Length: 543
Image 1 (cartoon, rainbow, N blue to C red):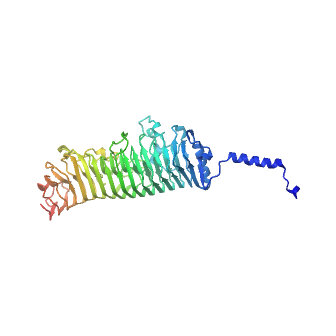
Image 2: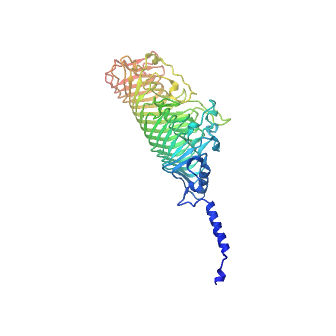
Image 3: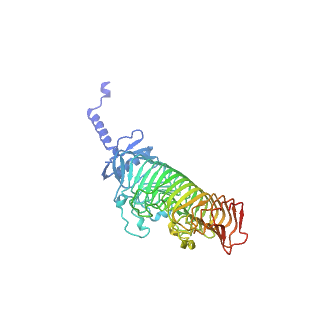
């Protein structure tokens, strides 16, 4: 029996030796589905290029699904390509450092066509057509983006060779949680045509280069973003539609954000459009960065909504927003820039902008431009309701501003400062159908003789509970020009104002004043010579 099972010692030695060699060459087997990048050769010293080792860990993890772990350390990396079923987890004490050598980044051009094709080439973390992926952890991703210098002013060259930190395209079931993101060479993160996207608890500081957006949600659907902190030189919470995909079914809540440009921005590109978006419980405060590349140190815009490249913007709710120091707290714009995103694309027609509710907004230290809601002749913004809004403006408007001729500028980039100072210190509305202003209060710090509200070519106007600061030399608190079907109710004139209402334009008709308090006004209304005799009715007002 012993002879039958005897194995020569030399064979046993060879078997043991071969096993030892195989174990030495192969990474340590994952523990509980966790693939530690150090087991795949990552050094974590901040000097050695660790992206090949990290990518090996991602490839191994993708076979079964699980977590690729970056333990404490500093991991220098070029492009990393995520895979389905992989959670890239950057632990507390770990930093993923973007390489400052563009040669360490791969060029990616997604299958989907979009305006980004002109300039988005490189990313630190990239994924396309993946499912069930995540980027999580309490660690840091630092793109070291200040090292990438812009060498030309020409488009699109000035955008190229500057890597994004995160870019995910047409991915499904995506989570990005609890990370600190810093110093991208371009936008910090872009999610293009993704579905079921969750972004929670991230902290972003992006002030090292041009185009330093906080986040760009582009043509995505079914999105939840919550409990985030962001401070960016360029736009902060940014919704785009750079392709035919519409951005829809989006909830953004419980965030504190800062931007030198626009804190909440929608519609720089709007090809597909925006639908069913809810934004709530947002604090907008001045940036911690003492210098700005774009915009203004105090912030150029609070809430900016626009559609200028065709597309639709509809069914938006924005509620509970605190804005500190943004020059223009509210800016709504339907334009006709009509930019195309692929060669031979027909010029898009003006888009549709309708069904927007903005409520419970407090804004202080706003600028001299005021707020505005502006469509185009024949293409009005439709069904906008502003309620429970209190804004304090810097003021400073003079009598010369009363006759300002505001150009239409249909092809302009949708930023509020392009219009300059308006003839109203509070709100200027033009080419609007269906505008409701409920419980609105405007005040100014520096004396301003402009009306608080000017409406031009507005149809179906409802104003209730309106109050605003004014001066004795102010001609009117509210100025309506070519306004049809308007009701002003339960509002009051400011102390010393000359007239509560100034009505102008031959097209003005169906204007009613109901239950208002005019006791502080010298006279109730003024009318232009071209206004029809029956254009204005007064019912039950206090004089």
